Image (cartoon, rainbow, N blue to C red; front, side, top):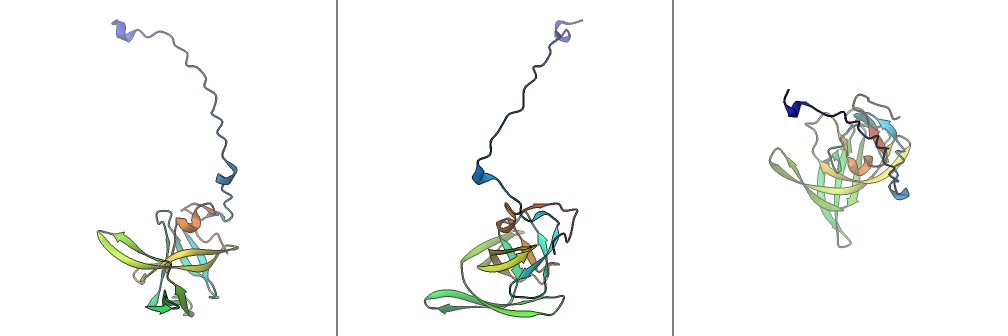
Length: 165
């Protein structure tokens, strides 16, 4: 037998688990708990929910709008738009101050979008968050909920759907 094949009996040392203390300001409370890949979201003040795709890969949430127009109010840029619930036909017109513009990259195409603050109800929480305004008529879901809403609020299990009411 060659010398390389002769291994001495070595007993590995038992290493205790590391104790890592998470700072209090970093603790996540996950108030929405475990949610699924598709959840109902209420865009306030609308009465009926829209089906929303939960997307941990998206940084900012997005919503399907029509009749998008820009205008100026008191020297600030604003947008007006309409949201129509595809399931119920409920329609609501919004006028919101423009927060910023963003560029979305999809399959080598850059798309400029307006971003506004919207109040939405997800589960029992009312959340004010940024939404990019998009034409999502070719998509199955009118709303995409991104990390700007999910982080610290939910754990996503893609095997589930409609866990929130």
